[in-house]
Image 1 (cartoon, each protein chain N blue to C red):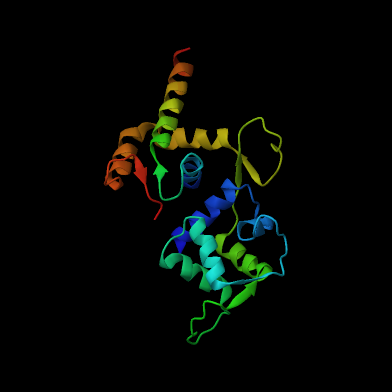
Image 2 (cartoon, rainbow over the protein chains, first blue to last red):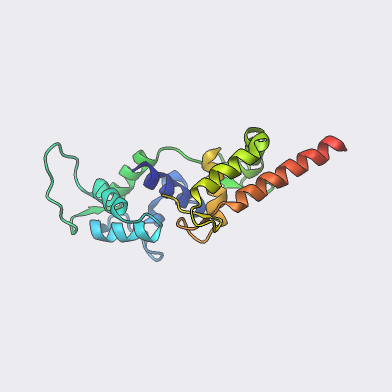
Length: 152
Length: 41
């Protein structure tokens, strides 16, 4: 679940959606109806479109839609919950996060944003001396030597 | 910071299934070179 959660957070950051406006991540482009009911199978498809594949998309959709229960729940892919309820659970699951802005752009004082230049400075401070180690670690996971890694 | 590094790569990749990690190495090289230039100036 942690990898799926991290990927969702990255997709929110990529789409520049702040924590209080996550709904567009799971709503269609032309909708802003938070009362809309979404089924497990629909939410699973949304997650797959965002890069969460296989069982993880189903597990995450079930977690967000099925009611909390200590007993066994019979899986029903047509079970639904409102967008607002799904988002409330998603906010708790993902936790706080920042968006990133290039230096000099319009929202420099917006508390939701962190300057990319600041983050790059941290990258240099922490990895500048370990360039070769970082490359080696990345290549170790690149089994096909294509310069590509799967987020999984 | 690791989250930012993932974000940096994802923003420059086709998808989460094809994360082009070379862009991270390029970023690091660029930052190291900038630092070297500042130090030698």
